[in-house]
Image (cartoon, rainbow, N blue to C red; front, side, top):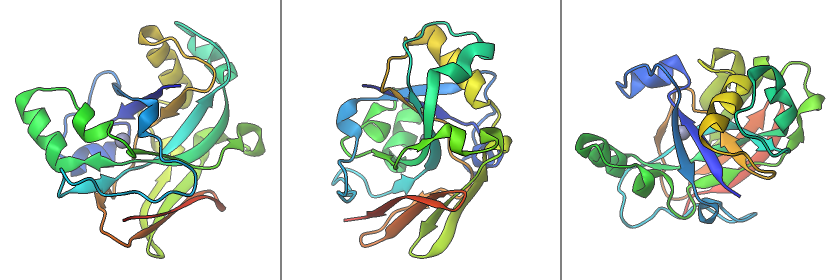
Length: 203
Ligand code: ZN
């Protein structure tokens, strides 16, 4: 199983990191070793002093596909949830300056939290879903999937031009604004509409 992540898919988040708006989605991969096992905390790695949370709507691939046409893309994912793309921002900034790949900052062990999956048919319109991340009981990130620069179907189509999608693969669809540093003992709770899909502690 692989995780394909999309960067810069919400305008306000692009602005908060002073990034340029891309002409096609920024895509990177996390290996299966990045996934946090069920009910485990997130451990801040010793090589970063500035790990950020990025709450993102995630999709689960249910059908093998390559070069998927946008109009059939909806058939290739059946479940939806919220995840966290944990990012060592200090490392990422160094790598960006040097023009080097992002894996050390984005694909390390524990950098991917996957929430509890929900059948996408439980929602009336997945292209207009509210989601939120609470930090220690307060809203840290609020998003709506209608604000994405590229829709789920556009992302599935675009990603599958480069990477064959396999059953069980996961797509992280980008974070809205509000990303910030995690601290020891923080508690994060993820919601899609009013459904609580994860709770995680920082250690
Ligand atoms: Zn992200």
